Image (cartoon, rainbow, N blue to C red; front, side):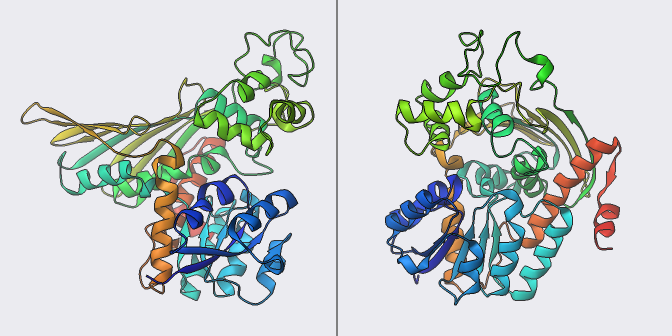
Length: 422
């Protein structure tokens, strides 16, 4: 397989830390030849790590894409609102594109990107990494093999985890739909995608309910300051007290969010950022507006029904599923890498343990990189598992869910899709 060259736009948490390491671990498959990143420190670190020439290191993505082609492919890992324009430009310039989810922050832009990808006949993959995990691949295969007969219904829960909600969706980059996107899109378009894949049919109807219930000013403890570091009276009992959240948690997830707060992970540097930056704010005094809990009901053309729940108020993060069929049942827990398969005829339950890492979305981050590189090296002869057509549909499911939540009505997907086409 010939080596693929790539340019990275956005050298933050996902670009530099989730996908970038693939080029270091498998240099015979992938070489980064250019980078565009606003933050000078991040840009320099990525440039040095991957041996990128100085003239191919850019502050603005426009400078990278306005010049001569510098690679076979472009990875776009910018913030949500900065996905559409660079993806459109890269496809038009003849690059293959791997785009971080969500595709875009409006349904119209998602549809347009799908059309552009088809027009230019490039590999265009969206980072719906769950499809590339061993866990979800095993679930899909069990359904294909008829292990539970005909699939009838799915119950799926996304346990966001209370600290993750506080970090990303109250204090962090995805806290406000005006500056990023609704939470059902920014967090749970992964889930809409994998549910579409498992249901194996077109979604026909969507309804949804949810709200921002807890992380609001009126729920702030008496005397709580605007910043945790300004002498909070409940610092010993508040689960969201910033110094405790970012300095005392030593598991891989804790270290990952600490790295977001400060590239320098020393105690002094982290504390400084908590005193002046967004992650030191009281969770009850932020400018967040995205939901902290939401339910979505989905109906598909093959009569499969799905009940999806996303909730911030869980002790642990992760995804759990209950898949019900005419001949059996599957209970599955992604973070435990465990699948329980029950057979109605025999009454037996078999436990399947999946060998997959806890970090990197259960191996999905590297899984999608491996698949994307293969498709590019083959000249784009095959479509990606998370290509334009399927990704547009799953994104429209997320947009429809938010529309349903806000308008308190059931959304008919065919009518909704046609309304976007003008």
